[in-house]
Image (cartoon, rainbow, N blue to C red; front, side, top):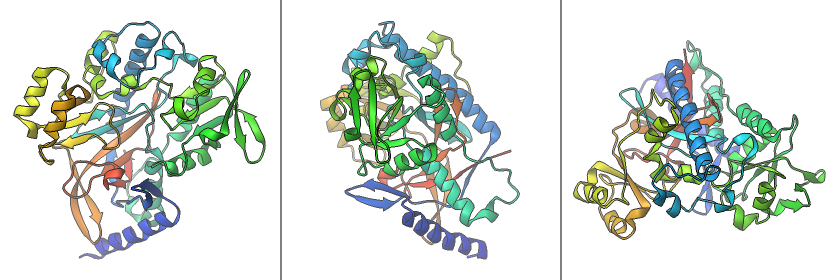
Length: 413
């Protein structure tokens, strides 16, 4: 082992210990565990970043346009069974016009590369997470392995300021009071909730801290008691259960909520199939990034294709996230087919992609691992804080809850 390799492994242990001691954790399986950092940066060019960014800005416009058409224009441009069966449709949003016409404030899109060419795997517009992990992975490697970046012109991570500016614009106030709504320390991404609220000066609030009074929404604070809140950046899905009066206040225009309730119709995996069609419908270009072959299993012919050749597909539950409801048939037991036969309408299938692998420092060795990107689009801007998630050795599943690592991304050139 060379001196550089030895140094990387030594500093990898130091980085991960320091990160854990500083609370860089992920809650899963009833405990907090350190978020493992792969300290070998993933380098992408500015041209690649710009190509993906332009695509994602247009794609987010399409998602926003779809949601507007369904709720405001009462038209369903995709098969109506998707809207009728998705758990994310909110009938109370029909006819409601959100502030500035914005539904999707944040989109966390999952991107992979195949021979250098980007492919999009899915959109995440309900409560997308991960930007804090992108910031921290970058910061830790710069802190402990700064000499790695010598000779590179690396862009500093940005994006949180885009989030703040987007929320401020939607609020209509020059200095809005913004609360980040979390369901508390047992949320898997609670580290991120604290990180964002601290960086942007948001009030970190749980449902019990939110109150609705005549004409306004208030949040309890330790220093000032109850204060008026203009915007709620929500990081929970169950608004109806956890904050039953908040939806009514939103519909009355007393508060702005981001992302807007009901955006999940664009997040449904079945909707993903129809994005290229919607791009043509709205006259919005989607060049630069490919979309893999994806089929809805609601159609029995498509179901039969999967049954006949399961190893060619990744199976995803329509409402799944964080690896939940995802099965790579060439890696998993075909017993998954039994569940498909019972609830086929709740699944989609996507072609298996042999996407790019990277070199990762794991323990005292180097391994070749599958890795993806998560890019964060804040309405019409894309963060340079890009998250790369690394699967455990041999696995194409990269999310943290499945044991994956996070890797710093350097944008150069």
